Length: 156
Image (cartoon, rainbow, N blue to C red; front, side, top):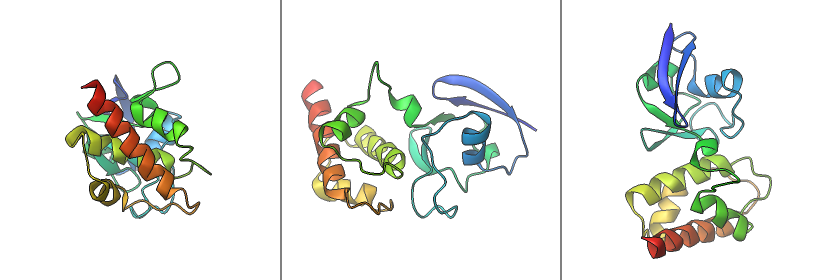
């Protein structure tokens, strides 16, 4: 079955079984590295992507569910030439250690800042609470999200 959707700003089509997890398609067929397989149960957040702007766990989402929708991975948020404010803030705050959880956390933080450009510390904590990070970088991650929020608020 051909499933058509928009991936990181580009129209794509993939011929796979409709119940194939979106994460499998993103990593294996489109060769994207940012969304990671963590738990396979939608509990760790490493596989998070935006689906029409909403942070969504790709490991349990069948690809057919994104037909006609926009999917954005960390690769689609920004890159070296034009990084997203969150990417800049995570670098500035040295908010990464192993980096396994980072993509999902940045994706969820971007969804938060899209719907609430000036979140409180409590709102940032709540938005990131569903992500597992074993490295202990969470305090720096919270600072990075607050930094990106301040930057986007100053620019707006």
